[in-house]
Image (cartoon, rainbow, N blue to C red; front, top):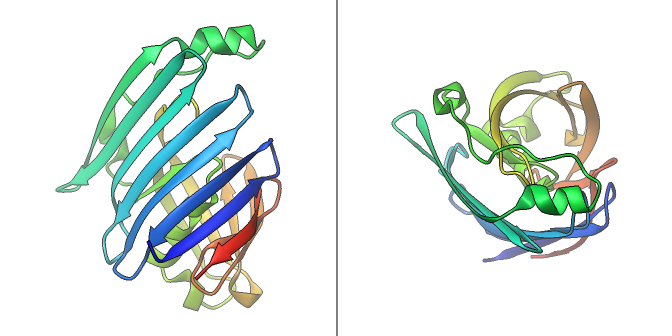
Length: 207
C-alpha cells in the first residue's frame, strides 16, 4: 500500500491507522482503537471502483469477551449485508454502565439501495469516498451535494441509511452535515481529512 495515514481521535482516547492505494479508485485497510464506549479494536477493509463508488466493506470489532463482524457488498445496484457475532457485547456495555448496543447488520438491506458510499463511524478515511466520487476538490465554493450513505455504527456494526450533505468551502475544504451534526473538514489535496473538528486529527502521513 503506497500511502499511510494516522489519525488521533479527539472525541475519545484512540487512534485510526490506514494503509491505502488510490491509483485506481480505493483499496484500503485500517485499524482503529478506541476506549469508548468500551475498549475495542476495529479492523476494516474497503474497496471502491475507479469512480470511487464503494463496492465492498469488511469490518470486525473486538473487545473483552465479544467479537462482531460485518460484510457489505454492492452488486447490480443492491447491497448485501452479512454479519456474525461471538460473545456478548451488551454484557460488556452493561459492565461499563453503558446502554445496550443495537443488533449488527440490517433487516432491510433494500433501504440502502440509494447509497453509493459507506461511512464507518468515527473513521475519517470514509469522508474521502464521497469527496472524490463527487469531484468536490475541484468544485466551486458553495457547491452542495446531498447523498445517502450506508452508515456502519461502531461497535455495534448496525447498518443504517443516513442522509449526508457536503458543501464546498474556500481552499478546497468541505462542510459535512448529517443528523443535526456539522463540521468543517480540513482536507489535503487528495481529499483526505487532515482535521475533523471534534472527531479526529491527522498526526502522521507518509507518501
